[in-house]
Image 1: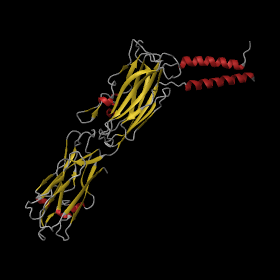
Image 2: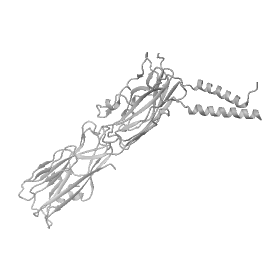
Image 3: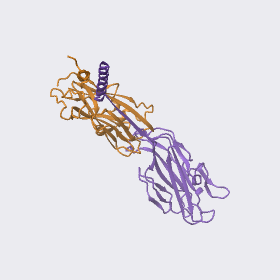
Image 4: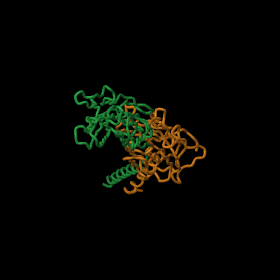
Length: 223
Length: 232
């Protein structure tokens, strides 16, 4: 029997497809979890994709955070999508925000919390033997837990100052029912990363930071 | 030739698959970049109620209210010899706040209805800034530079002119003639630490005005003073 070239190609493609599915099947994935939002900003903005199948690439501009901004707080909510076919953990690392002037914006001045972990559609795996755990101290909305410290400066229950190296903020059991290599609209979980900055008499200047969210295999908890 | 076509098709398929895998794109990392801007900020407000002393008639028409915009109106009353007090003085508390080094400037105009040199002029209105206070939670310690000579009623700051007999405020920047154009009265380093605007503390300093009752030409006089704080 002699196969035609086209048939050979087709068969080869199928083999490659199977190989690709095996190799790249959804193990651990992080993506946009929806449209980020910002409130209380003067001259600020947040950009990111509303599509949960797009990569997590968000740019936050808190805008003016001197007393020229008379709002009580600038709050940004960034939904983040996560998918896995195994127990997972999400860690965050930060670069930037290393102002030498202690009166300028510091990492501790940016409130950071994790809230509202929820199923992303019908293919999100609901495990009964383990829960998704927001690691301490990040399980709070920094907009509601902000207080004025002994120095008069605003303090948060958790902030970017709590990040040290790669810091685990969330972990739990399997996230997705299926094992698709394709990001879908409804095959995982979403949580909100909440960032806040209270306008204060900071020393003038521009501050910036970059956060890397990483999903990896987590503690081996049952589903 | 057919063999070559098969190889080409295989390569094409590999390329398509590679492309497909890339497009299916899952990722284990995501990025959130953030920035914030802090502009220089300065403000001047009332530091509280005005104190008027030595007046005969007159009074505080519009008083200062702490932490509210500075808009004070004072009637100094009678400034002729019928007022037997040595000085009519008004102390106007100012409150300054900033997240940067600041300069407080002042500009004054004095207008009298009189027509002779004996009318009240800018040089007849003594002026100085009193003791600067940086106290309270969130207020940064720092040394301020008072460009005036302080309380204009101090003996060191004025005296009777031996030739004309007129009382004169003679010290540096001790009367309003020194402020006919915007002139620095006070300057210093950053006032506030990183605290919210709701923190009501700040730098306080009294602006002291004084007039020596004399045989001025009769008439009415209007004194207008504007304070401006900037962050150069």
